[in-house]
Image (cartoon, rainbow, N blue to C red):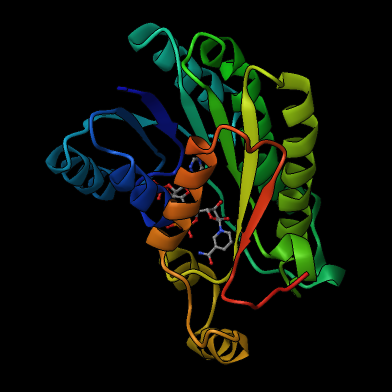
Length: 243
Ligand SMILES: NC(=O)c1ccc[n+]([C@@H]2O[C@H](COP(=O)([O-])OP(=O)(O)OC[C@H]3O[C@@H](n4cnc5c(N)ncnc54)[C@H](OP(=O)(O)O)[C@@H]3O)[C@@H](O)[C@H]2O)c1
């Protein structure tokens, strides 16, 4: 079955690996914000694996960016089978006593509002899809807290709660799940984590290494393909967090 799949933040890291993994036979809408060249490289790999990539640029931390993306999907495809809300980031590390209002707005706009609003805009398109589903990418930060990333953890926590409410509201038509990655080797950490801190994460992780973007993509594919799964958050972190 050929599917129409929208992946936000698919220029690099987890989004790119997901696009490549899901490529075969599918329309893959690769969203990016600033990394056009990387998005084009991802599109080429999607093509090589038998997918039909389509690139779309938008700043999803804005209402206009979310609207433009949803309108493009509506005009070009008229339906959606899968939405992966993956775009996100820390924005900056900030000690709690230095929290600024503008930083709160930026972090929540990028990690929470974008996924919530884009989801809302895409519901009518998903209702026209085949076994439609949504996968939200949250973080291990929702489980064990993350010093200097408290806003980010809270923003992802809100997305996790949204996942469960939405799963109930949209059942039985649209399934909604989340994947909460641990520390994954992607460009994310070049932006936000020192090499020393990364080495610490590695040594604290029972499996003794960082995760790969492909391992997260595998869990995202499971959420999409398992027809009895909804309202679930899959923790994938090499044992760094255990229930
Ligand atoms: N790596 C980890 O350890 C880890 C752990 C837990 C959760 N996560 C989450 O996993 C997701 C993917 O992260 P990653 O590790 O793959 O990092 P990444 O390679 O830095 O990817 C982040 C993606 O988000 C996009 N993005 C950033 N700002 C945006 C904006 N304003 N509007 C639209 N898109 C924007 C980027 O697009 P451009 O580059 O094109 O601007 C990029 O494609 C994120 O939600 C992140 O919070 C990552």
